[in-house]
Image (cartoon, rainbow, N blue to C red; front, side):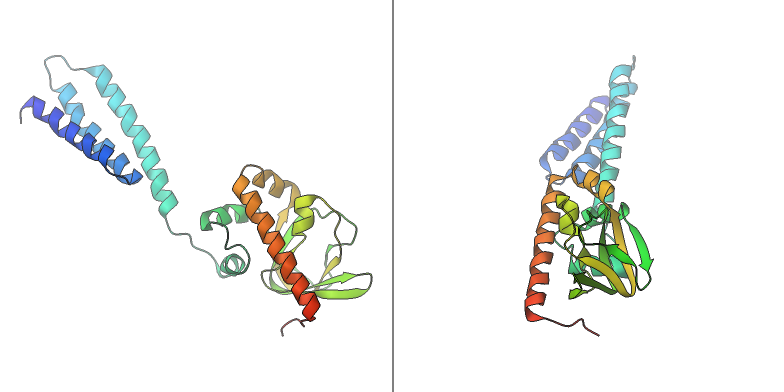
Length: 220
C-alpha cells in the first residue's frame, strides 16, 4: 500500500467519526483513525515522532471516554428491595442516579419499639421503609402507618425543621437510612436531584394527608 494511502484512509475514518451522531461510535472511529495514521508517521525515511506521540495521547483519551460511555450505558441491576423503593417512591430519578443515592445510605433491620424520630427534634437521618410497619403518632394520637416505600423525615431533613410526629417501629422493619449530613452534602452537588427529592417529599406529604382524611387502615 502506498504510504500516502494510509493518510487518506485515516482521514476518511476521521471524516466518518465527525459525521456520526453517537458519541461512542465517534470515540471508536477516532481511535481507529489514530491507529491507522501512526504507521504513516513511522514508515518514513525520518519518522515523525511528535505526531506519533500526540496520536497515542488522543488514543488514550478517547479510550478512557469510550469506556466511560460503555459503563454509563450498562443496564442497572436492582435487588428486590431496591426495586421496590425505586418503583414506589424514587421513579422520578434516573436509575443510575438512584444507585448513587443508595450508595451513601445503609440498610438497617429494626426491632419493634425502635424510635426513628421524635416530635420536636430535627431528624439526623431519613428512612425509607421497605418491610414492616412504622407508626406515626402525635400527642398520643395515631396519625397513620408507613407503607413499603414510605419515607420518614424527608420534609424535615430537607428543610432542617423539627419533626411533627413520633415515628416508631411497631412491626420489625427493614429500612434504607441516609444520614442527614451525608444526604445534604450529596444533593448539593446535583441541583436536579435536590429538585427531584423535594417533589418526592411533596408527593409523599400529599399521600399522607389523603390517607389521614380517608382514615385508611394499614394493609395486613
